[in-house]
Amino acid sequence: MAGDYARMKTIMPLPLCLALALAIPPAARADAPRRVASFNLCADQLVVALADPEQIAGLSPYATQPGLSVVANEAKRFRKLDWQAESTIVLQPDLVFVGPNDRSVTRRMLASQGLRVVAVEFVTDLDSARTQIRDVAKLLGHADRGEKLVAALDAARARLVARRSAAPRTAIVVERGGYAQGPSSLAATLLDEAGLKSPPGAPKGYGGFIPLEKLLMLKSDLVFVKDPPSAPGDQGALYLMHPAMQALYPPERRIALPTRFTMCGGPALVAAFEYLADVLAKANP
Image 1: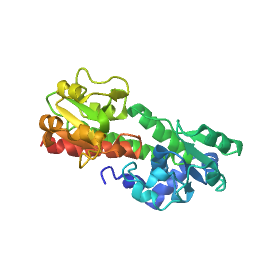
Image 2: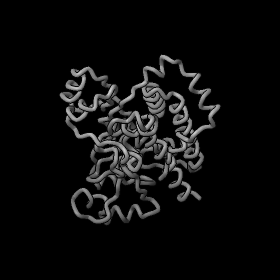
Image 3: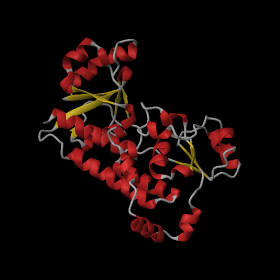
Image 4: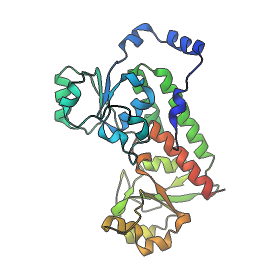
C-alpha cells in the first residue's frame, strides 16, 4: 500500500534500542498508558503506527475499513469497539482517544468513570499534522517513534514537491453530488504541496456544493474525484459521470483520490503524499 509506514517500527539493533530506552526519563516510561482505546478514525491510525501492540485495548469500527483507513489490514488484529461507552469501560483503559465531534454523552460517561479522555483534533495543514504526531507519540510513551513518523512525512512531502510541474496548474477536488473541497481542507493542502492551485471561482473555506455547470465553467486543468463511481447508479454518481464531465475531463485530466487520503494526518498523510507523487510521476514523466 502507498505510504507503508511499517518501516517506522523497524527493529533496531539492541545497543540502539537500549540507548533510546535510557534516554527516556524513567518517570515518562512509567506514566505511559498500558491500555489504550480509540473511538476515532484518525486516532486509530496514529495508535497503530505509534503504540506497542500490547498497549492497544481496542479501536473504532472504522479502523478496519480499507476505504477509510490506511492501517485497515494491521488493525484487524485488535479488538473492535462498538460505539457504546460501556464496551470501553469494561476494558478499563487508562487512555481513551476520541474525536472533536464524537458523542458528548459517551465522552461524559467515559470521563465520569475516571478514564482519561483525550480529543484528537482535525488537521488541515502540515504544522498541525506534525504537532499531532509528536503529541500522540509522547502520550503513548514513544516520542522516538513520533519523530520517525514526522521524518517519514517530511520525506514523502519532499518526494511530492519534486514531482511538481514546471508550469502552474489549477486543480479541484470533487465528491459525489458535487461537493468541492475548499482551500482550508486537508485535500487542498495536499494539492497545494503538489503545486496545484484552486481555479478562480472555486468554493472558499472548507468547501461547498457546486453545480455541474459552474464546475465545467471553471475549466480547471485537473479534477481530482474522490472515490469515483464505476456506474451512474444514483444522482451523486451521475454528477461525476455526466457526459459533459467525461468530455471535459478525460482520464489524463481526471485523477482518482481515495477518501482515506483526505481525512487524517499521521500515516494517512504520509500515504497521501506518496500516492500523489506516484500519480504526478505518471502524469509528468
